[in-house]
Structures are given as C-alpha cells and as structure tokens.
Image (cartoon, rainbow, N blue to C red; front, side, top):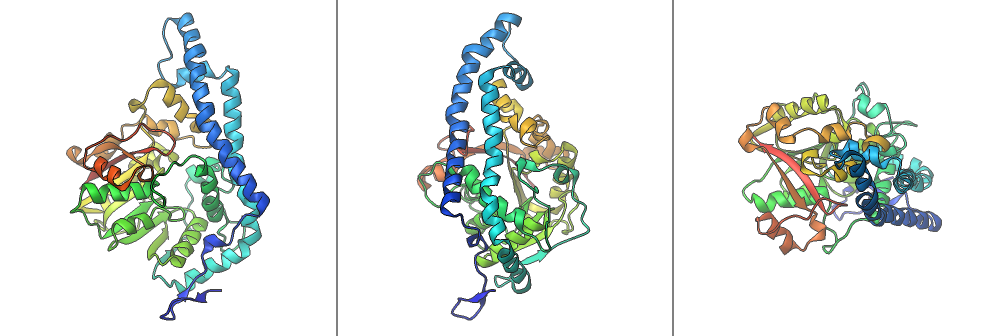
Length: 404
C-alpha cells in the first residue's frame, strides 16, 4: 500500500488525510454547516446578548432588585426565553450536523485508511512509534458518553485495527472551525502553533529536547512544536487506540517522527524527569477535577528540572463575568462535557501548586491566536508590547502553566 517517493528509496506512506474526501454534495453540506455554526456563534450570539441586556436582566432586577450574580443564575433567567431556546436548539443540532456531514466519506474510504494505518505501524518510514495497550481501562469520563457529541468518542472500535473515530475527528474539526477562524497569517495559527511560537519568542534560551502532549488524539498539536523546536523528540498519549493509529499514520506520511502510546495520563509509564515540556489543549475540562489533580501530579513527576508545563484551557470562572460564564458553560449541559463548568470553577494556579509546583513559577496568561496577527504583531505581544484580544471564537487562548 505504501509507495516509493523519496530519492533515497525510503518507503513513503500515502497521506491518510487524503482518502476521506467529500463529494460535491458532501462538500456543499459541510460548507453550509460551517457557515451555520458561524452565524450561531457570532451573529446570533450577539443578538442573544442584546436580548439578555435589554430584556432578561432588567426583568430579573425588577423582581429581585439585583442582576443575576453568576452563570447559574443567568442560565435560570435565560432558560424560559424563546430566543435562547431557539439558539440553544440550533447550536445543539449544528454540533451533531458537524459530525454527520463527514460520516459518509469516512465510511466510504475506511478500509483503505485502515490499511495505511496498518502499514504505518509495520514500516514507520519517519521513525516514529506506536504503542497500544488493549488492556487499558478506558476512563469513565471518556467511555460513558460521546464527548462533543462525536459518534464513538475517541476510543470506540467498530472493526479490527479501526481508525474511524480518528478520521471523523480529523475531518469534523475542520468543519467545526471552518467558518470561525480569521487569519491574516495563512498557514499559521491554532492552539499548538500559537503556544509553541509564544514560548520560542518569549523564552529564546528554552530549547526542550523531549516534548509530551497529553490527550493528543490524532497528534495535530505535535507538528507545530517540531516547527518551533526542531531538535525535540515528540511524544503523545491518549486513551483511544483509533485516534492514535490515525495520528501515527498521519505523522509518518508527513515525515514527522513522533512517538504515540495508549496511556491514561493519571498513571504514565515514563521515567521520572524525562520531559522538558509537557503540554495539552482543551484536555482538562473533559475530565473530573480529581483526575485533573492526579494528572498534574504525574506531570510534575515526569517533568525534568528546568522544564516547563503549559496547558491551553477555557478561561477560569473568576476571570469572566456572569453572562460570559453562562455562555461558555452551555457545553457542560448540552455538549456532553459534564466536567466543563466544574473545572472552570477551579483556580488553575492552585491546582499546579497542589501538584507540587512552586507558587512563584505558576501563572495564567492569555495569548492571541498566531494566525490572527502578522509575525511582527505576534512577536510584539510575546515581548510584552501589546495585549491579547479578549477571549472569543479562536481569537485568543488562556494558558496555565509552571516551571520546575
């Protein structure tokens, strides 16, 4: 299945991303869904805020003498409102439509993609590795429901050596964000690219040799770190075998040397002090707070002295006002992310300190998306010469982290 493409005669795999391609009608549907999400998350969201400010909040004040004081109070006030109910229904259905819009193309090409993934595991032309553990117990946070409403979540296997949910995730996330991303720096941006280049610019003497990504899914956040730190070894862990198979094949076909392993981050098999940089993206809000504490303790264990850990997450509750907290926490009630709101109520710096990190090394920062700025503008931010935009759809990211 693999083909010879390099002058040296090394085996090259076909790009696993290239198999699942939409037909004309499927592409039209995906474009429609992406634009519908944009309308829901921008235009309709602004109209809903106007409804709250102009009608709902004044009504609560008239009855109680005070405006709703937190997200729960705002949600209780908004739930009877017809505009909110319509918006919420639209958002829920659009989320399901994201995944539904890519299922046919994935199913159509699944046997070929499985064959590529199997060849990648045997040949590994880029020198990466894939370690799976069929005896690993899938955590309840993953196994009990389809996170993000994605069919099969990250772990479900329908056939032998399955990669279906990896392909669904790869294609679906493109539809999910396709209408929302704004770029003036083509080919750049996204969570990992923004974090990696922020670190590279702000801390020019920091040159990690081994980087670990927690909850890596299909490994999308590994290649940007290779771009920023080309001498680093890349590692990614996840509990889902299908996403790891897909991620390994994807990395191998792109010539990226990455080491994927099926592990629960609460108890990793890596040696003490074995990584210089440990990262994650949108990971902790999908697990219970007790699990978060265990994982951060493990991060402290595997991080080498002088190393850094940094995690992109949702803004903590205390950093936002009642209405925006209500808006963000919609996912906790309707998007199969039940730990979302509980995580946001935590103090991320306090969680790091509890895990063993010295308080003076811990911090919380908001950075802009690199794709939304020119290179000069992004560098100016990293040097402290400008501020990141307020948190919204892919415009900026909240990071919490620490050094050891």
